[in-house]
Image (cartoon, rainbow, N blue to C red; front, side, top):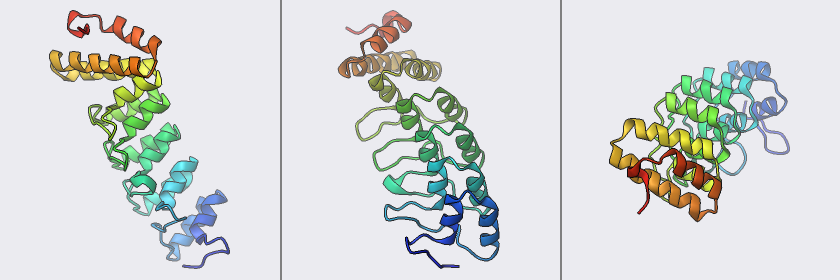
Length: 208
């Protein structure tokens, strides 16, 4: 079952690209490796399924006990891939199968960082339900909240700040809000900055 075509693609990858999860199940029953690597960037079959939004093939690979936390290009997991693609239904499947919501890629980003950047409220709410940590900083020293503010994603920034205010002491959440306001200003997101300043107008949130 290690045969490859002229482009170096294994049989399971061909089945995936043809949208044939039924064929994949047959190949797996004959001994095909569900953890097969693809391409030259470190991805595996499960990352390709995640990137292309193929929930049927993803289900087949999870049934074959492929880890949802397998690392691919940039050390991203499948949850990173589906979050970047805004495939919320697949993110839910991965989390139900034990995917780590706080996995960190080579840039220090968690899935929550990516969801904040692409402005996906639904995936953010899903990740928070699975206890994703909104306070993790990436290599830029930005939390997902800073990512949202830098991108001008106001509603996401509000949601995450509200979440942090509910679980952290007032002085910590107040200081966080100040830093987020500064990032919004730094990136020229003046509407976001104004909206956040208005929402978090408690004296503790006012910058000095």
